Length: 343
Image 1 (cartoon, rainbow, N blue to C red):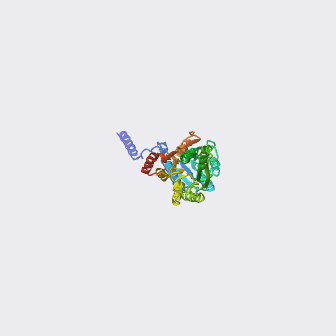
Image 2 (image 1 turned 135 degrees about the vertical axis):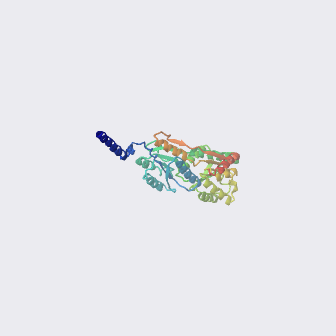
Image 3 (image 1 turned 60 degrees about the vertical axis):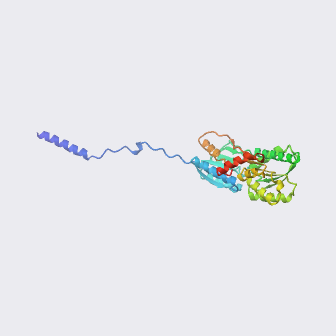
């Protein structure tokens, strides 16, 4: 009995000790399943050539919206029509180590050094709207996304020939050119298209050309000068490189009482006010080079960053509005107004 009591006491002590022992320690957190780390937010650097008109403002908003849609972040700078500032802007943005660099170059030659800057920083480069003096698809310069300003120039030249044949019975007459910026690639390309057509019509003369800086005020001032230099009967067609300049030129024409030129204006841009002027019969033809480059530019960056190949050259289609097809112009006008757009 004494032995049995001792055994019972031992069992009781063991039971009490077990009851007071701490709970089992859990496995270290490192052995537990871990949540996936959040994906890195991509940074898109965008160098804007200028913000001097509605086309550029729309272009800027579209680029930022498309980057946001892709879940990225935009860092941006406005070169304000200064090539040296654009290069400095690009250097500053590359110092922030973006994932992709998108540049809307101010001038073909002056903006070309952005390629070396991108190469040195090892950041993929996408050029939009205007071209530069470099070959896309080499080094970090991956793709060029443009519109055919050559085609636009041809279309405006063909309309000018049509207008002058209807006016005189043959292709002859005088043209004044309200030009954007002589060194800008859209102007260079549009002039190529224009010259290609006009080589067949030596009796159509461009009697004056002057830069108006892509602004309405510039267009008005240049046109006022043309009207003073060339009295009634000495100008047959007015050609303009952008809608704002065209609207300035039209205002100068109306202010001067030179109504003989209404209906003999051809231009590029496709702003809502210019399309309204087409419907009103004041502009004979307006080509539209839409400002919406964001979708293609961002998609190209994403493809490049994922290791996929992209075409070295890509195109955004242009549109054409004619006073001879007012119903078509009005339909487009109604659609963009309903969407709250300017292009």
